[in-house]
Length: 331
Image (cartoon, rainbow, N blue to C red):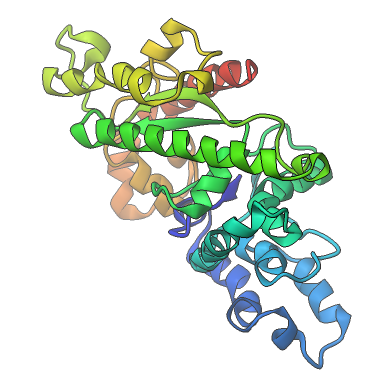
């Protein structure tokens, strides 16, 4: 996973503050002052040592941001579990977004640095996949529609939209649909203007839509669809229509009508987990593992009283992931 959200929520969930500080602190001078100034008067071993330890995504993007040669090697990821690693985020990532915005016009002229800036996040993901044998790379983005998300979402293979059953999510789908239409037009223009060799630095096709989720909905056993209260259901049922109206048809052509109508994984991750996510963040562990951990005294009664419900989240997220991967294989 790559934490490309400048708010670093994924990193904060995955690692404790001490671990994050140990990753960020050695990078501070390079991030703040630049590679050349930070390494002035130091030998090559200083950079080699930095790259031999876990580094943030902003550190790895720094050569592209500054327009220097890329690092000779990639740093090790933060291991979170069996077959699961993370490239941590960093609060300073907005600086890279500013470079994307300022270099976008130069990409139309085929400027190598500008094209590298637009494609570097995907290239970085591919480098890590090659080095560590990853089958999938998940990029966590912020909920904004700025320049950083423009290049990330436009150059990955697929994306999905998380939605709450409320009015704001319906407007969010409309906004991202309009943005995708504009982004695709921008990239189509770019591809027509640059050489075929430079076009190879981009993915062969524009991103495809994988579907949507409904999350944090209150569960009611009322007999209504998806076990939602009528107020939530009235918004949830409007999501597929909003997608049909605003997400360009060419980006969702591989999604069947039934897949479009139903959330990814059905109701598996739809209903609220109440305080479970907060406890998972506190212990930096998946929800289903929390009952197995050494718990703080104030959490023992809460967790042990709901032990089975904590454990059941594992099957729910497996169901969600299975459906997501099935959709991704159609891309």
